Amino acid sequence: MTFKDLKKRVSTDTQQRFQILESLRDKPFWVWDVDSHRLEDARTSGSCCFNHIIGLPKKSGLEKPIFDYEKMIIDNLRSTRHLWIKKATGLGISELLLRFMGWLCVKDDTLRGSQMCIVTGPRIDLAINLIDRMKHLFKETTSLEFDTRETVIELNGVHIEAYPSHHLDSMRGLPNVSFILLDEADFFPPGQQQDARDVSERYIGKSNPWIVMVSTPNVPGGLFEKIEREPEDTCLYRRLFLDYTFGLDRIYTREEIEKAKASPSFEREYNLKYLGKVGNVFHTLDIEAAICTQKEGQEMMDWSTSTMVGRSMGIDVAWGDTSKFAIVITQYRNNKVEVFYAESFEKPLMNEIINHIMQLKQRHHITKLYCDGANPEVIRELKARIGEYHDYYGRLTEEQIWSLRSSNSWQIIPVNFQKRHREMLQWTYTLMSKRFIKIHPSLHKLIVSLRTAIVSDDWKLDKQQTSHHDTLDSLRLSLCNYELPKNNP
Image (cartoon, rainbow, N blue to C red; front, side):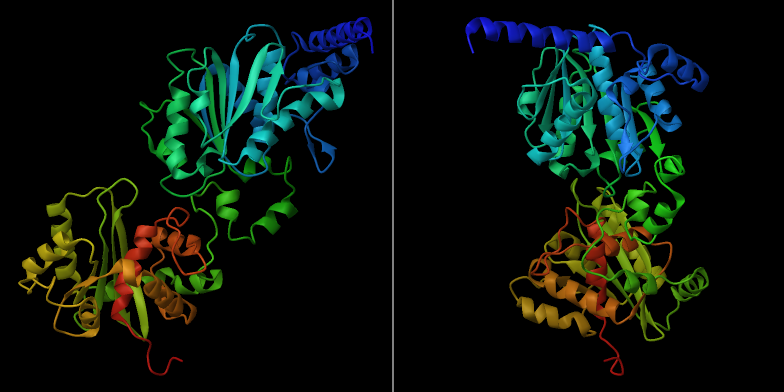
C-alpha cells in the first residue's frame, strides 16, 4: 500500500467515524413515552434514540427495552451527581450505566477532553471485560472500531479507562474527570474499599464528576453498609435500593426467581441482605436445624436466669477498626447447648465493657468465662472483680491452663486462641453436625457468621470473608465448656 493509498484510507475511516458519531448527536438516551417513542421510531426509521441506534440490551439473545426502574436511575443521574445503588444481581444496572456513560460522550461535545474512570475489583480481567463491553455497544450496530489498549476506550474525545481496585495510583491527579463508576464496589477487598472511595471523592472539589457506586451487597460492615448507615443529612450519596421485585416479569421470570429462592445465597444476591459468601464449614441443613422456633426461643430465655442450669460465656476481645468486641453466652439444657445471647461492640471503653460482662455474669449465673488469652488486661480485671487468683503467667503452662476449662477451680479461663483456633472450630463443627446446638432465632449476626464461615484446607478461618467472625470466635470460646453426652456417638 502506497502512502497515498494509506492517507486515502485514513481519511475514509475518519469520515466514516464522523458520520457515525453525527448519527448519535443530540439523540435522547431513551424516549420514555411509549406512544411518542413509536412515532419517532417510525419517523426516523429506527434512529429515534441512542439505545435503538446502538442496539437494545439483550438477555438470552432477546432484546430488552429500557425498563421503568432504569428510568428511575437515569432520572436520579439528571438531578444528582452522587448515586449509590444497592441492587439484585442480573438487573442490568452495570450495562445501563455503561450505556449512559457512552451517551454522555456522544450526545454533544460537552465532555470532550475529559476522563471517565471505571473502578473494578482487583483482577485486571474485570477491568478489561467492562471496557470490552462498552466497545461492543458500538461495534455491533455502528461498526465503530477502537484501536486503544484493552482497558481504554476513546469516544468522541473522551478518555474512558478501567482501573483495578488495587492499582488506583494512576487514577490520582487526572486533570478533568467527568464520571466515575465503581462497579460491584462492595466486593473490593476490605483494604481497597476506602481507598477507592477516597480517590473518587477527591475529585468533587476539582471537577465535580458523577460518582456512581453500584453493587450487590456483600459482607456486613463493608463499604456499602457503612454508606447505608450514614445519616440522611450528612450522606454524600442519594441511595437507591433495587431488590429482585423490580425485575419481576421484566428481566426475570417468576419461575427463575422461584428456582433462585432454593439457593442459600438468594437473600444476598436478590434480596439486598449483607450475608457475604456462602460458607464451606457448616452445612445449611445443620444451621437451619439449630435455629429454634419462637416458642422454643421464649422457653430458652425463660430458663436463662435459672440457677438450675450451667452457663458459659465466650469473650473475644477487640479494640480496633477491623474487629469488634464480642460476647456469646450458652447454657446446657435438655441435652443441648442453647445459645441465647450473642452481641458485638465497636471500640467499647474498657471499664464499661467489664461492667457489662459482670452484669451479664450475675444476671445469668454464669459459671465459666472463656477469654482470648492474648488480652491479659481484660482477664486480670475480670479475675480481680471476682477475687480469683490471677497471677498465672509464667507459673502455669498453656497445657495446664487449657486443662482447667472443665474443672471447678477457675471461673475465668484464658484460652490460647492462636494455638487452639483450629481445634475449637472443629469442635464447633462437631457439635453443629451432631445437632447438639440450638440458637435463639433473634441472633442474626451469629446465624450469618455460621452461614458464611469459610476456612482453608487446614481449618483456618478466613476472617475477611466470614461475616461477623468475632461473634463466631466468641461462640467457639463458649463451647469450650461442653462435652458430647455419652449416649451421643
